[in-house]
Image (cartoon, rainbow, N blue to C red; front, side, top):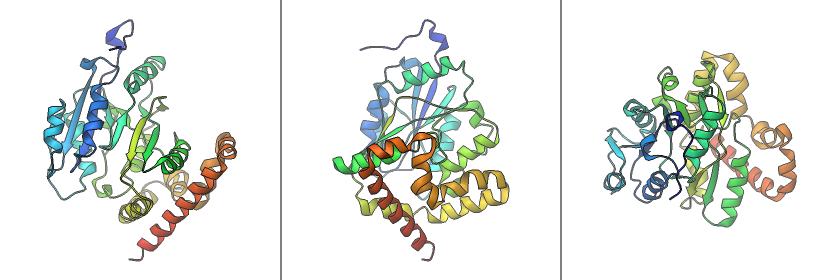
Length: 295
């Protein structure tokens, strides 16, 4: 097996990979195997699973694949509390928040380490690109096309953060477990003056079990959290609300602006049929979100 080595091993950053789980037996094995098979020294990272008392085989699978497993009680979803507990248990320099249905590309940690060395460890938080693995080639192509426009924008959220910086934040807001907790945490980092970067390698986000209807109805679960999040930053920081939150919920930005800013219109022109499909899906999401506010 090829192993990534720099001239001085001590220069390599150490990373705690934190994965919240609940009844995740269908996806957790591929997630953990991808982590276990990283092209990176094994003594430089650890895998932490924080489980919300799954009723399936999630915990035995995680233990069998070498993850450190911690249990957290409470009515699902406890995603924010699980991430916070994982970070508390983490022993290394960086915390990497990975979803249970994500699979790391084999050289992800290697590429991250290269970026850290290149930037002299001056970057506090890192974005990780996503590629969608969907229910059929068309859904995969459409969703991956859409997601590629979000990298390093206000729609994105950092996944790898220096632990010392994480500990200076208010952590993940547990009122937003059903909502945009990632966006909220990103604003916390920006308010602290943290610096951001993006790596080249990706995570593969598995959506094979997600139909269009499931995707749309899933978004309505976040309505209450979204309203809490918007009200929170409207009261706390006009700068953050006007510069970030309002854009995240702006139809103009989500349907047009994010696809054409910074020269991205060229990619739209090359895949215009995919753009039309994305606009249709985003319009459906917007309609479902609007209707859910009146339920």
